[in-house]
Amino acid sequence: MNLPDCLFCKIANKDIPAKVVFEDETLIAIEDINPAAPVHVLIIPKDHIVSLADIKPEDETVLGHIQVIAASLAGDLKLADQGYRLVNNCGEWGGQTVMHLHYHLLGGRHFGWPPG
Ligand code: 5GP
Ligand code: ZN
Image 1: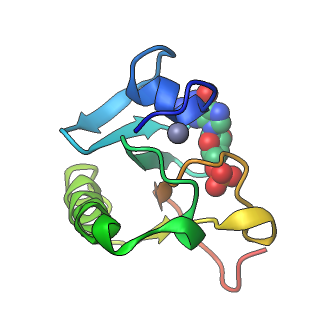
Image 2: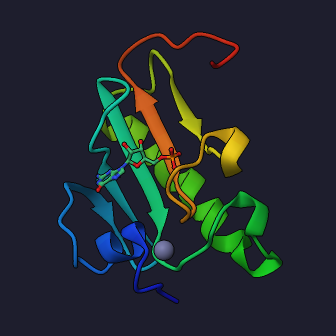
Image 3: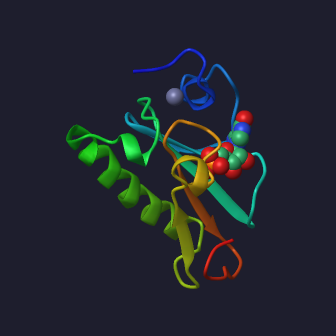
């Protein structure tokens, strides 16, 4: 399902351009427009899911697929040896600004902990 006014639905539909890193039937991976690291890819399910707080049992397959593709992309992007971070920001306090579920694949520098 797609929402007409959702940024990531529009990107998944190719109504708004993005630098596509990977795409298949269920998800699209694009370069973040405002990268927070040398590698910053957004992994976005094509179906509109608002946030991690909104997932349903039937979303389990696509959520698992996102992790498999994240690991595969991290390998392709030469991040696996030094390490990388896969992040989901959920809701206002989690820092989510686009209300369509997505994961940030970040790499190419050292990340601190705890996050800000
Ligand atoms: P959030 O804060 O919701 O976890 O992450 C949203 C991300 O989407 C941010 O890192 C932001 O830079 C990125 N973003 C916002 N608008 C666009 C856009 O139009 N194109 C792309 N490629 N990324 C975007
Ligand atoms: Zn959407």
